Image 1 (spheres, rainbow, N blue to C red):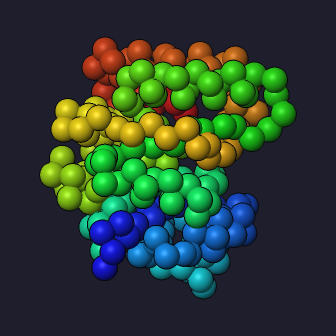
Image 2 (image 1 turned 90 degrees about the vertical axis):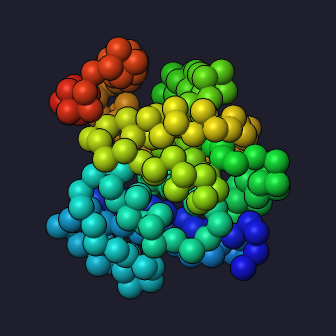
Length: 225
């Protein structure tokens, strides 16, 4: 096994509407860097998991992104783990850049952009990327990648309803600083489009503030709904 093999782990739940797009992204990631692609379903009932299982390994796990990603990580055999959200797109060139930094770093993330045409989306993405660079905290949309050994040492994702990505980063950065790659992945803007751009911006900042103040994950999840 190469020292830079990656296991890509994708938590899914009722992804039938975008199963074809996700499958296309995953096909393009099947290259020399990828040890395996593992999808972990949280109890979908829309047929999306069955559709994806025709081509990819799909594990059945408990509902909850953190728990699903932990299950995938436990099954993974790669020396690196990359956690990919179902509505985020990246390509093999992203993996090459991540692994080119592997000898010097232990974990990291990419810059992100939002799809869609609203004039605020580039502004939102700029603030997301700058905040991440300044704080060393990444979100799941930024495709967090980490050496499996380090992931296991910190205990993986917390089994919480929300902010599992932020909480993991807080523990990882106590061991090593992240590499903040400027190469950009594209993620869905559907939440901003469905609930309103400014309303969603306010919600995201409010969630982070409450998380910083120590609010429970259950309370944050209630606000997020």
